[in-house]
Length: 352
Ligand SMILES: Nc1ncnc2c1ncn2[C@@H]1O[C@H](COP(=O)(O)OP(=O)(O)OP(=O)(O)O)[C@@H](O)[C@H]1O
Ligand SMILES: [Mg+2]
Image (cartoon, rainbow, N blue to C red; front, side):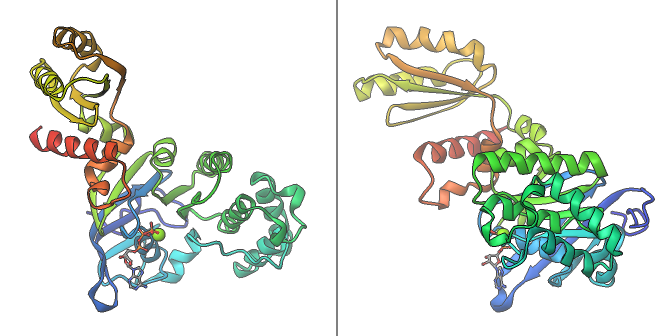
């Protein structure tokens, strides 16, 4: 992997990856390994998602890349600068919006932004223009002079993101930008994130544990679990890597023996890569699920096993995530359906 010489400087000349990370490791006190030998690169202009369950090491990684904490081992370069040796230069090129809100409730939205502009020594005229631009972009212009304590959660988050943008960073780090927000506000924030890339060519590095968000927004994602990167790629490519379709059947009431026979018959169908049955729900992973459905009914009819409901879908990012993190296998709160799907996917990919 090429470092520094192949990266993009804050001056602007584009030569390669804007974030390069190699073997990055963070061990906290008492030997807690939060991030373990993480390696990846982000291209300029990408929206790159870091996806993982609670405690996976997402915030720790983002804090190392934004120079807020020092790595225990490994190296990372942002916009061509070493996060350990040149933290000041890194900071000038990046914006960071933390998981927790950082805006001051006792100031207006405009004053929060103005204060932020002061940290970057922006001339007053320029600062004013940028504040207006950001307030408009984030849909806060009408409420700009109200105290933040009167803002809704979504407005506060939008202001928080605006504060991270005042110095027009080349790279914006967003740690869980939509956590706890309603669906409408979440979609609005996705729109702003996309606009930042389109308008300014900004690179966005964001963490999330919402599959839908990663799927809708990110060009590529890295799935991290227990400090280790499990997979990196475009959402579509990761879904394709799992392969096949997922057919879900809900059997009508039938004697257990009949159901067992039905499951065995389904397992014997051409193209079927795995069948799992639990409490009347049957999950079939198969190549060409569309063509399989009529055959399913053909084998079930003579057995006298009826079907209440049938669904067919391509593997979702949820399936990808479940496969790589096996979240529900150790999380008692996961639904039975998720647990079963994860076990099947694991078996399938291992066998592939
Ligand atoms: N300051 C700290 N001291 C000790 N351990 C820490 C510290 N900060 C985080 N950890 C531990 O490091 C691991 C990774 O935490 P981190 O906050 O990076 O996870 P995360 O992926 O951001 O999780 P979440 O989705 O809950 O925000 C966890 O086991 C956490 O308990
Ligand atoms: Mg976090």
